[in-house]
View (cartoon, rainbow, N blue to C red):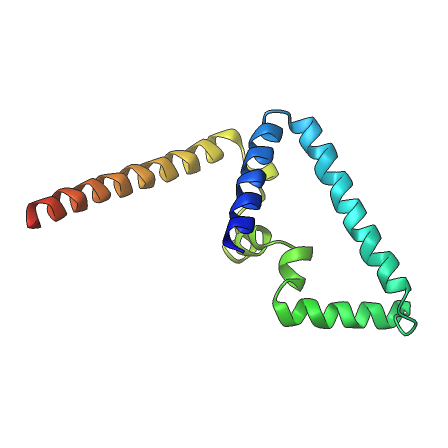
Amino acid sequence: MKKILYFFDKLEDNIRSALSKRPVIYAFVGGTAIVLFWRGVWLMADMIPFLTGPVSMLLSIAMLLAIGLFVSFFIGDTILISGLKKEKRLDEKVASEIKTELDILNNIQKRLNDIEEKLKTLKEKMN
């Protein structure tokens, strides 16, 4: 079983790497696969007699709420967090605000790298 999972994991990595270099083709292949998946789900649901429109909707809402995807799928985590922080949407921000945030994130990354290096040095001294 591990060999099968490893094979498909490596296959996914290779396909994703190749398609990443061709974003338009990647979008077309991904979009087609998503539509075909949902078409299959739709056709299977049509085979179940009691899955009428209202029943399907109530069942799906209950399932999405139970597994925690309802709000994040339809609204998105980023929008919720930015709303709670009273931040502007990305399209409302000016370039200077985005650059400032990027500089802050880069500074944090640099500080984390410095801390990691110091921890490595400390670990080497202890050994």
